Length: 143
Figure 1 (cartoon, rainbow, N blue to C red):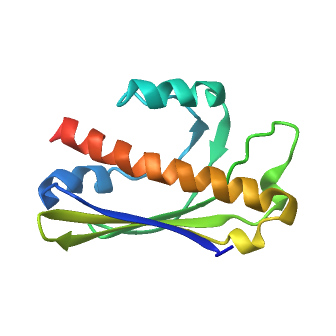
Figure 2: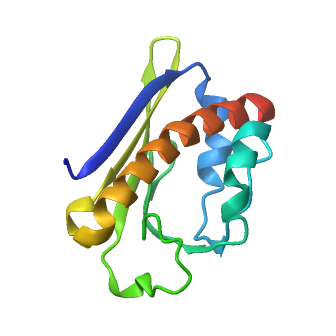
C-alpha cells in the first residue's frame, strides 16, 4: 500500500470563483455534519453526524495551497487518537485548460498503526473522491 491517496481532476471553474473559498480557510475544531450540497451523500454521512474532529492547519499559500493534519477515520469514541501520528492533507490549485486543477493528496498512512491503517486508507480514499465532487458542486453554487 502506498503512503498517499492522490486524486485529481480538472474542475471547470475560473480562479475568481475559487479565491473566496481558499481565503476563508481557518483552523477548525468541531463536529461532523452532513453536507447540504448533495442529498444522497448527506444520507451516507448521517451515521457520523455529531462526531467530533480536529484538524491542525499546516500551511496556507493563498490561491495555491491549503494543507492540514488530522487523525484519519478517527470514529471510535472509545479510542484516544491523540497519541497516534496524523496524516497530511494537501489541496493544491493550478491553472489548467478549461478550468482549475484541484489536486488532493493525503500522506502519512505508513505511520498510522497497522491495525487501523487499511480501514483509514480505504475510508479516506472514498471520502476524498466524494469530497472533490462536493467541492466542485459547492463552488458552482456560490459562483
